[in-house]
Length: 536
Image (cartoon, rainbow, N blue to C red; front, side):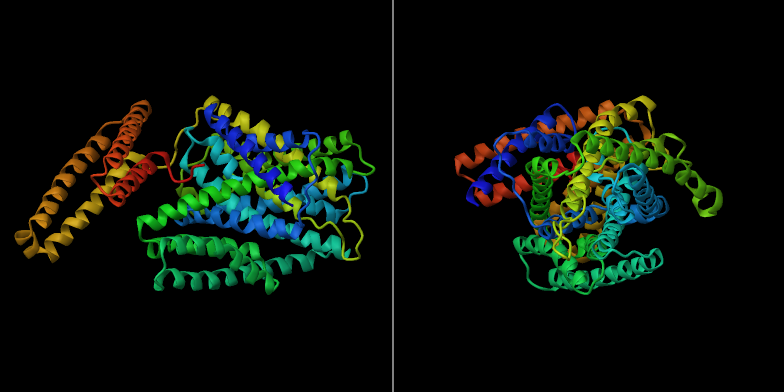
């Protein structure tokens, strides 16, 4: 046991080094994770580590789904609900069905239930992979929002397909009519349970005297509460996690109202999700030699051929779906015509960004080892091998070519969206105006009698004047992207110098460490405005 833990820690350290290399050479880190998983399988003498499939499903999937819900903008999600729904439900069921019947035709000994099981596993793309690949590229906000929203919901829909297919394999019976009815009942009640538990957790955060550490710990516990309670009632734990996560995220401004709480949670969740991603690929790498050895009547080359065929099918199906899916609703739904036409470039990027990732891998690893009658689960190793091939092909091939595609077609923003600099200046202006109005309406006497309050008012008036001028200049001048990048580069360099100055102040021991840490946190927030909140 101790040796296995040490081995996993050592491999995690190697993966971290690879991710640093990925950042250095500007390649999306999920690509390096799948390469690391493959590389681990070739290291001679490594022990085969096997973890209970139920533990894998429970340990990995709830926090991964919850984190995706947490970073989903409800307003953007609702705005683009039609294309998200068509991809998250329509494309998932379409892909699962075609993969099911294709695998039966291609793979000898494959049943339709196993086909749907495989289809449920490989149908959902990974938003983390797509967002990491597209980071820093000029991609329309609509495409990114649709990809993130799709990934959130299609994880839920594909996992429900997986569960129904798994039940069909275990019991040997399957009825499409019954499955469709059960799907809506299980999914709907999962949402009800998720919202109920989320309201309870909301009350804990809102009305009890929690600390930043307790708030962060509760957010880690919440997805497990959501999942386990829903599953205890035989409803969809996945839908419970997604719906509960969206609710908590939407009300986060009410319950996480201090900078210390938000920074604490950001660091915790960023680290947790990254480590979970790395662990899943390490586990598949450690188990890959055993998977290959357990292919039975199928050779490695046959299994590889099947994996490549399924990879080609899921890539082609997504490209076939996105173009009519983007335009047909505009022909038949009047409300859809109000938005600018996506053209062909947006759907092409969305179609080529269908990279599979950690959710598919964790789902495949959760397939039971034994049936209810204690016999080995049929073709489990073949399904795992095909899943890894699909992830490898989509991540490596599409991951490397997607940036080239974006640059080649020169896709541009088509929706009326304010530039980030204008949004930032506008928000700052509103906040400072609200602060000044509060001072003038409630603290008139204090402004005259208290020098510090009077100084605060003058500072706000000066800040409002400066911010207004900055906003006017941004609205009048079409600042080039290169100029914005240079401006951000200068700011980051200044922040780095300020950090060095804070380090000097700490050594001088004139100011307290507590006050210095407050200034460091302010620098953290300033950097987050430039680098964003979802980082490694």
